Length: 346
Picture 1 (cartoon, rainbow, N blue to C red):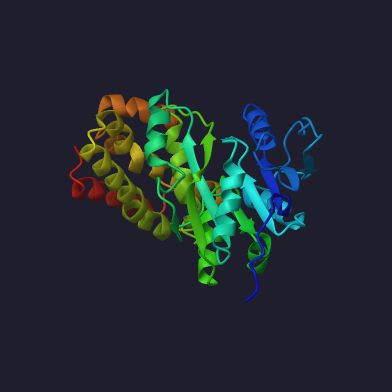
Picture 2: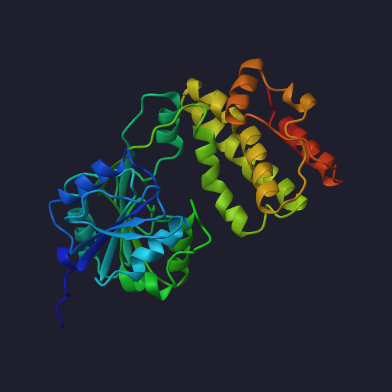
């Protein structure tokens, strides 16, 4: 019987994808340098920041892209430059606890059949309504118990076997801001790999949000998969998203907060389908150059309470009228109206 070979700290390359997050990168780097076990190599992937990253390079190698290519591309650059059997990642607005890397390494050594592990990322700031809403509805962890094969491993806080990522071609380069982590996990699972979640590997997210900013960030979690599937290229795709995605997400979050008596969250919950539809249409116009309806129409907008109308206009400051009307525009507004009735909108 051959003895299993355990990974050592020097078997790890840790990298941070970086793009203009100047305020949070110093504590992130400091947290890496102060880890209880030291990786073999530390990389900062500067994805075309302006000005270029020029911090301390004593323990950190900087690899700079000539232009911004997006998060998945930055992760692939780290993978291409990795010569160790393990590759770990922290986002540039994340600070790890001192034993974060040690606990991820322990997870990889405790079950050598797994191809990767993710830790627990908690929200550091919970001062504003946006921060508190994010801590509940945009939590980047799977709770307080370790288990095998979570739905996916979050990109902000993880470790993988390098060859496992290379065997599937790395990250999907078209995913510039979101969904690259879920897509990677889904591909690994489809190829028979196993993953692990360990809440003992703790890190803290330094993002700040207000009630004006939080729903735009939340929408980004859900647009990338639809973009990949071509849902923003036609009126039919956009209409299909109204109930399946936008109202479905609203109903789930609203019911969750109503049952938990988080009454201060309900106005934000109620704005989800309105904000998501407006952002869907803006993206379709920008990426596919298709004429989209004015949303919300004046009549539709009157169905929102006055205070919610004010908040909506802070989130979505303007909606352009189309230069020409398409046959599906009325269908889009009618579908939204039907969903308001179906979900007992009050």
